Amino acid sequence: MSVTTTRVADGTGRPAVATREAKRLPQFDGVRAVCALALLVVHVAWTAGLTGSYTDDPNNLPAAILINGFQVAVGVFFLLSGLFLYRPFAQATIAGTQRPKLRPYLLRRLLRLLPAYYVVTAVALLVLNYSSIDGVWYVLRPVLLMQNYDPLFMVGMDITWTVVTEVHWYLALPLIAFLNHLYARRGATPASRARRLMIAPPLLVLVGFAWTYYIHTDSMGPFPPEYWWPVSMAANFGVGLALGVMSALTRVSPKDKPALFGLASRRPGAFWFAALIVFAINCAEPFGRPGYGDYDTMGGSLIFYALLISFGTLILLPMIAPGTKSRMIDVTLTNRPIVYLGRISYGIYLWHFIVLNLYLGSGSIFDAGPQQLPALRGTVGFWELEAAVLIGTVIVASLSYYLIERPILNFGERRLNAKKLADQAPVPVVPAQREAADRSPASVG
Image (cartoon, rainbow, N blue to C red; front, side, top):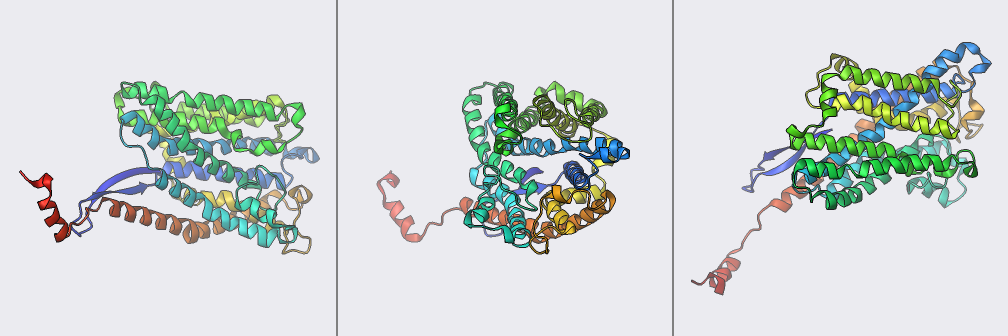
């Protein structure tokens, strides 16, 4: 989302004020759509038994290898968050202007993620998991975004670990930005301030890789609870911050545009071809079993982590580099169906496990009650399940966007704009105050 400001007057005699005009960039909607759909296919294929157990039918091997490669898509979401959320903070530091206010930042981000998430949580609890509720904590845990730290099986909530991760990084970002600002503001030029801002991203990358190493040590066992903690995505978020710094520097001082941006704008196809190679490597699953999608070995996990970062970076660099002209990017990401799916992509991502379980008859509303997906694997063929989940999810995601997400976001923007107008309105001076001011010592002589 690109944010611009315009000057408007409200007809009341008050001075014109800046208002926030959010303009969606179609190519980023497109990339969100592609990534959300890719992950939907991954989850449907696993549930249908197409991946992870292709040895039951050797003919499934090519499709299993290809589909498991799509898992690199999950890293793109965290790169986008780091890029777009940190760029305004970085731009203010680099330009030496006022830093973004914390209240509007938090309000916009939480209104974007939480309303739809809480509706999904309510449906999961009341429709799918009602018979499993065994106490207050069972309900409070997802409400308080604690399910990553105290894992417990809940039908339909599988994908929400990423929501918890995103929200906690949203809360951490202002502190990271403030600490970066304290150090970077001492730079004498925009370029030097940008270089100082680039210290934090590699530190986050190191933390992410160290965490991945730690949770895959033998003492931790297979898939420990710490596997889902937000720190697991530190490297992806850190690289997103680096992209945000480079983009901010280019906006403030075009002459200091990073060389990588220049190369990406001149050769966008080469970057996307490199991303395709990364995707192919992930399909081959080094240190893992091709077609299984299991990364429970130390080497396989570290390589997969590196592939997540590499794929997202190579995809996004040509898209954020100024002056990029690519027919391939436009055709792939800005056609109307993809842009629409990108607009509702959060709903696609958030709801598809709910739709998947409902179609399979797993939940408290069914006689069998809630069942874990491994027990249902292979009960429905891939193409039937894919069609049902895709169509159902797009319908539900559309309703979610137009009935929940968009109205709440618009309400938040109206409140923020009204507060901005009120804050910038001149304070009226009543006659008695004016007369008292005229008689004050400061007004004499």
